[in-house]
Length: 133
Image: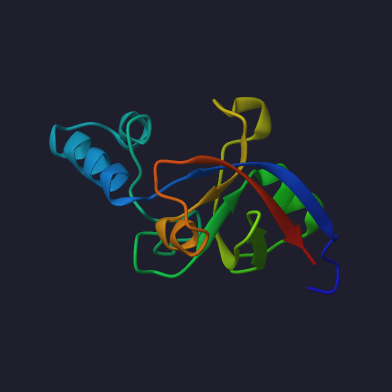
């Protein structure tokens, strides 16, 4: 991890893998939807590398692939995320879509445990700062 590029980003955070998200995904799958179809309505709670991102799995985040690559990040890298008055250390367990494909202004996704440590209630779109050191 010696080649990790330092970065501080002030941006919007959205939430992922919250219980309602997972319920919507499972309901879609139960109706015979494909993973691609079901990801349009929810989340399966499993990160890109197979990690559990659901509630109770510990603070986790997802970043766009470009950021992961540019900064030399790897699975499980700790990302410091803060609001005005709270801080959490969220492990990188997933990736978001490429920046050009994002449907909203978020540049980091937070799982339910990271949201809870920051006092955020999913679904959320909140101003945060994240730091890669």
